[in-house]
Image (cartoon, rainbow, N blue to C red; front, side):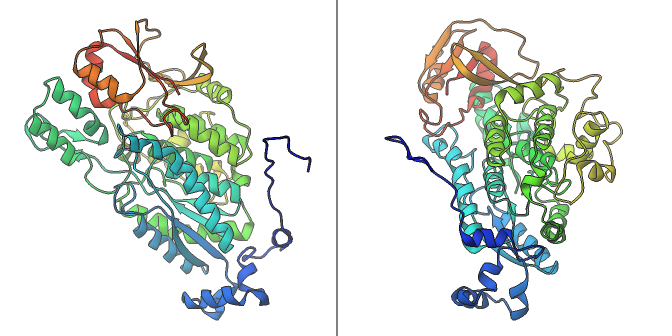
Length: 498
């Protein structure tokens, strides 16, 4: 290796003789774990495995590391330890050894609008590093990750790709809708978006204080990720479109009995991947990323998908740029009437056929590739041939002949403010242009103080600076929804300078 220049460090992958031994192991199930279970010099490790309850006959079985994102303080994750136990049950039934280990998670909703939001994006990389650390140190043969909240999904995918051992992602599932109980909110369908927006409704006089509190109490009725096409549901749909989840994983609600059945089916599926040595990089091809990005555009997914898909592609050694994303957006229609830009939530999409029905519709119309391998051991086309299509009469997914918008809602912009590119979410409701006087702020709180004090004239362009990975730090999301009704009344347009 060439000597680094002054001030530079060259980092290279450490390849040891044991790594080479693993790669030369041939068609064995315990390709990695035998480094602990079969070597005479690994007696201490074997003794510790016996201490955990393994028996002699278990020592020759393949071992599956099951990554649980479970913790109590967030509905996206509060049920995931229970799902992990079901995955473990299915893994053992399939004749494998399943061991659960935990990683961290950060709720994006709870710290929004505070300094705590600076820790959300870094959590993605901590997740990736922690999974890779445990899997590598303990020589597990395969991984099953069970993410729940926004940064969980790309975090586990980055680790899975870097490890390149057989793997399946089980999405923790989406939350069901809530219902209001008081006054103007009685029987009103609710989700997390309403909880974000209700302060603006209160300030503008649409609801009173008790109704505001009623929305907050009932917007999130139980376990699962935020119900709209926010980041968690966007990324879970993308992961299923990539081929890294079993069919329906991204749309089955968290508290639906079908989620338990999915967890139990993972055992035979991961065994099949180990037997056939089907690895993530066999699945995560450029075509697979095109499929995922197409689904993101069709469903109206989060702008965060751009950031995460680029990171996931890099981990999988797939060349992907923002220009590639723009190319897909330019030829892909926006079809889904889903929150936050539309009416319905992920639970409704599942009821009308789920993510596989959407994928089937796109495949039948030539919008996605059918020849991509998936974690079922079959191609995308083979999987979709076995599923039902969209339910008759559904109005969540518009036909290609009548899209919400003929091109994707995510647009890559370039100009003197963002010479390296910026991401805009344009769903078709905003018009094609907007001109106004720029009102520049350096912090989110300054904006909302100015709004509440009526210091921003109608028709302004509001700019908030220093919100990037360094300036934020941590690229915090800015909660525009805190005053959505105020913003709509003033016809304000926003720009976040990263």
